[in-house]
Image (cartoon, one colour):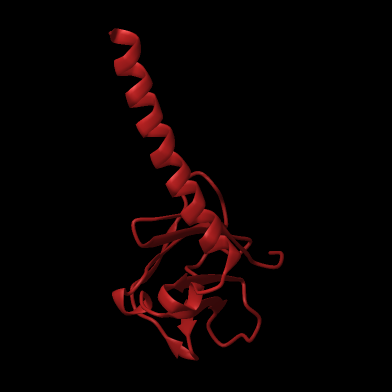
Length: 126
């Protein structure tokens, strides 16, 4: 058995999904921490067709969404080293963040493109 690795597969609908590899044949004791506190709603299930691999799913708690930056750390129970992490930035934590500004500009550009396409489409029909 090598060193276990946890790779993010997806993050959709408030569910983080990862794949834990090289963790052995027995279900690994994995935990996710937020501010040093173990979080509920973490499941580890065998990954079909892949020996020593496990599907990991973490349901993000609604309390994680607010005016803050929140970091979740995934690790094997009793170990210090993190296998993966998930950082959520929302609300006032994004003030002055260029990524937020860029996302807002993209949304506004999409709106302008839709309006132009709609208006140009009605003019060409005249």
